Length: 317
Image (cartoon, rainbow, N blue to C red; front, side, top):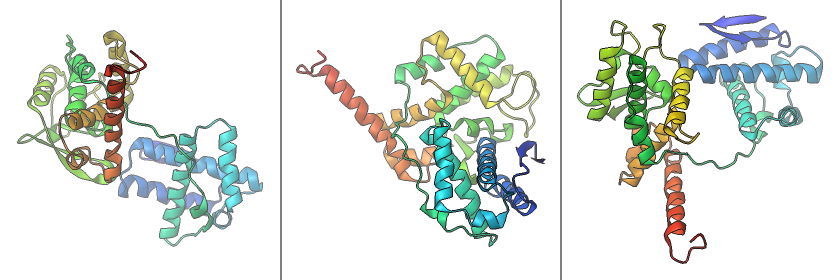
């Protein structure tokens, strides 16, 4: 059976009993309205829980209700993760799936619906330690200095300049409306968990946005999206990512040149030029300083690379 939540369709199979389906409905609404998760996160969590219930249905050979879910053992959770591993899913994908299931079970517990004591003992698959992959400063400048001859090219330049100039996540930038334009040199951004922050806006960012707005063919109203698609709706993230792919091919940029890499570049280049971690944490909207500290590792890795290439006794010389 299928149910619809504000345009997002979640497949809830016959593997689940009505009492469980009802709670999935309530949880989905809570994620969307109360937690304000992104559409991408919402779809991922919904997919995770549906796949988990399907696994239990096949595992137990019966319809899964709240009672059966509460009885799921540690061995059952491990079997589910093992199946995902055998199906070829990477550790990051298995960790994401476990996060979705844990979120649902924690929500059920918190609301007094059901308790499963075993989920707390399930270990998250070990993830490889990945560092952010920013662009080098000349690469970022080359990308943002690229000139175009139509309004969509100006739009893309304005978007990428905003991402690099303010360190925004792409969904934060694409969520902006005309009424959200910078005032008094600051931009109000609604980040993860509905956490609002203020970000200073460089003059070049405002200028690039104004140039795009002057050429954009769609009339402006306060509630109109700032970044428009060619058909008159809000610009889709996939379209922006394709524009970046096309640009990096033309400009000879590496495959790591993505819209999100511009946020990494913002943080890394600030750090290289003397900003401290606390300041960068506030600008990025990170809840934890440990997340921001990843950029110090990028700096250290780059320093070692320079050292090895420059030192007269380096084996590479």
